[in-house]
Image (cartoon, rainbow, N blue to C red; front, side, top):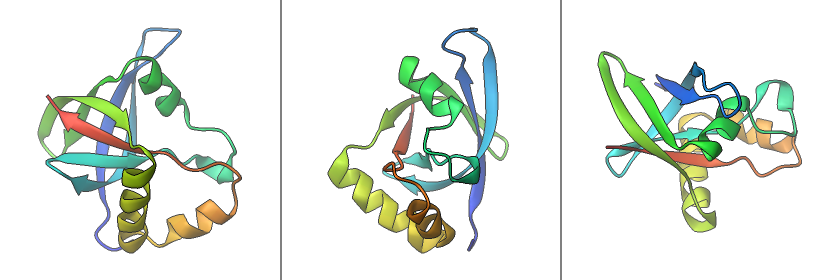
Length: 113
């Protein structure tokens, strides 16, 4: 990973209503941040934080000392492919990950509000 930066994403549990914070690598795009909904150990299901933000897209993002609210939006096909290429350039190991799962890995744009 070349200079892969990490943010903290806080989502609200869709069932519990509890706040959950997850560290995630990100790339930047159009004044916001982009994260990928990969899962540990090549699982063929999305991570819990992704399911939570699909239920409630209002999230909190922390990048270094900056904390902000944001709206999470899954990138549509064309944009998703563009962002995926950018991610692979930044962190080539995601290409290997994609080979071990049958699902298309979502790219999520976080737009600060």
